[in-house]
Length: 563
Image (cartoon, rainbow, N blue to C red; front, side, top):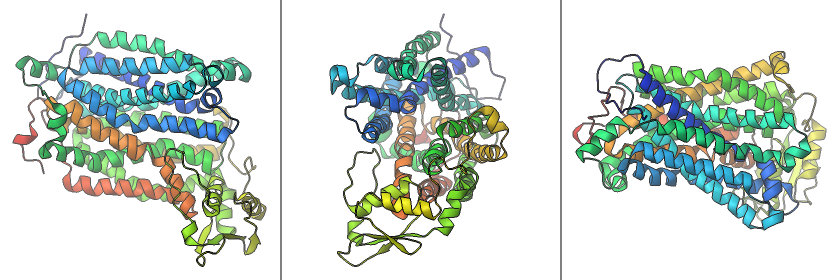
């Protein structure tokens, strides 16, 4: 039996009903599994690269898989357009059943794909196609789940109800890591490399079956069903949402005054922080994942807290406060993380002076969002090498046509090999730590983390970053839903959310790395999320309306004064 769609009208807040709990559980469970599917490609990138990509260059292979991962982010806005339109024309329930099925089957196919040794270049091509399908599906899933839950929520509790959807990305990441860790511990490294890495992908078919079963028990959203019964649903939601300035303006404000800042704070707190730990501070992956997982575990309930709080004081003040506080405190927080995780590195940045000098025209942009550019100029190659090895440097403009030169504490170092290897060795000899240096934090088990004061301090700093994530992410689903009338809600809210998270957020790590490589300062990449978060704070403060008291069943932006 399908759960009946009971209209929820404006009125006093009341306790959650059994039907509403089922709606939240079903919508959240399906979204958790979609995030699980999406994260697997990133978690198992090394195994995928070895099986699907030809050649012996491990770096090139890994970059290809990261390109596939980025491709999934890039197409999310297009999925939002396609499935948002379907959701506003045909229905919420039908649409997120379709997106979930596409995601599950695409992930399952990755587990079955023959490797390059068997089918040649069809293997990497098929993998990219699967990633594109996953990105399209995820672009349609989130808007459907958030809209569906919000349209079942009673007035005064939409922030609390939709905040459960906001926990799904974290739970999906946890689920993928638990499955992978369990498999690694239950079989030899050789067996996992040979076939074990495919099992998490194949398990998605079980998760898909469960998700379809639980969602089939739901009925259509009461708001959409009422509108459809009355014949007032949109016949052209794309042109209505984005082809008319009064509605398109809402999308622009939602993007720049909410979603973009939310995205960079979210990706900085969960993804860039992990990148910073492993790639910049050279903390081993096990330790980094443990402290990050512990911070996420402690921080996850705050998604619910801030969603609930947004019903009391508003969506706008919580979201914008998260953006502002994050922008103000990122530099001291990341400096604290660095001093805790790798104190020798921070000491070296203050004591070892590395200087590059050359023709400014020979030092180009290092922006490479999907890892496909080829750099040949010595200045670019050396700067990338220094950034990869977390070595701080100063770039001094030389005369036109002058060759690249380098010094470490005033002593000249040859750069003839154009790779920077000799420069890295000289910097390490002068005081920079090597990979595996004893001063770098190492806590290879949960017990070791809990028993190490440095590891606990690091976890606490990461928790603060996660807390910012929960502030901006907990209320945003309700905010975006409430910005749009029912007839174009799915389409309207999905696009700004996925442009914000897929583009502003998804390309944060490579953008930040390019800034670090160009500037020579390991903390300078933080300017990207800081500037975007401050932009969102200013635009949101001036233009973003407060929406918590709106009755989404009757709200029409064309009949209400908004800005």
